[in-house]
Length: 541
Figure 1 (spheres, one colour):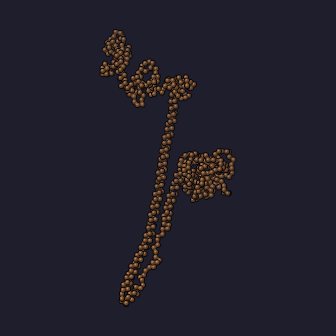
Figure 2: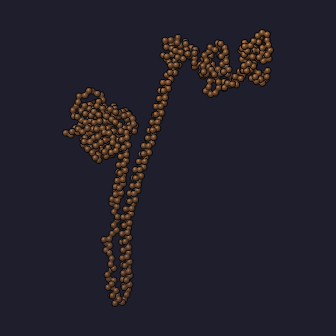
């Protein structure tokens, strides 16, 4: 029988009415098989009761019989067909929990049975009345996670107080007095929130993409700055190298020319001496020859011409003067220095223009100004008024030093500002950290949180312990202050002369920095009333 079944095709198990595999097959008295539903519906629509296959007429409506063996064969064949039609489970898909051997893909999961079913094993849930009441959902894995660990009941409610899923028993115990809603209701609420969450997530993603772009732009700018720095360095050093090579060639040529002139002088003298030696040697031969003659007349006649030596130079005053190289190397170095100064001027000008790109617009903060100081309404100028004004107490205000800070502070990056100091005999300016003590005597050193220049009657120093005295080539009119917070750098520039004055390096900044101005007080009748003026940067100077 098994071999026979194996060789049968789908036609052997197909209803001749619906042409599909038998569903609840029954047999007529004539021995033909049909689906119970198909043959019943067929006879309901006919006046005569006959077999749809052989057309045999029946006097009365026949009782339909179930062929048990044939029904089992149909069930097995139908199961085999359905299994072949169903896909096997793929990775990341939910498998059927009932299948043995090759697992098929689950099409539904039952929240009552806590089992996932393929199409074949789901069939009882679609046919049996009791199973039809079970709640079926799209296939999900780990169905045990949907059960309450404490009460072994389905998690079908949501506690709004503790924001957790609970079962019915939980609402009678631990969550008895908490507001609880069905999962579907909370699902709708949370689903509505997803749009906002998604928008927030997308905004965060965009912000981070913007951050990435900013970092890339910074890297590109840094690369451009590095390339420009290298190019400037190569240009200057190449010019210096050419100048050094020219100076070396000029020095070599000059020394060799002087040596050549000295050697020529020596050669000329040697030739002259050799000629005199030759003449004297010839005279010596004549003298020796005459000394051997015994002809008195000839001897006396020849002696007259031999007694006077041939004309020669007085060599006692003749010398070969060594060439003088005094100043030769110095003149070459002077030329090199001139070239270096010219290139340095270009370099200083380029450096100042570069830091001026980080100009910030800052205004003075009246809440920090000493009571003697007077500020303009625009917050750009400050001078010593000489009179202590009655001002309200403010912890930000300087009470001992004649100083003022700006409203703006900086905690990262780079910034630059310029202050006009023209016509002042004393002043103090730079940057200060936020936590400086403003009510005691001011000690303006980096250790106390100040990085400043101090000027008094042609003396310029960077305030430190000890102070660093700086040279002045001309009277300062405008001072530029550049800070690279992250690099720990504070630099000062003579803007008019376009000269770098001083740089404090290796500084450690851990809190906000404020631009700091001190118009200073009067000394021995010196008024020093000119203001310190925060000036706009003019890069065309």
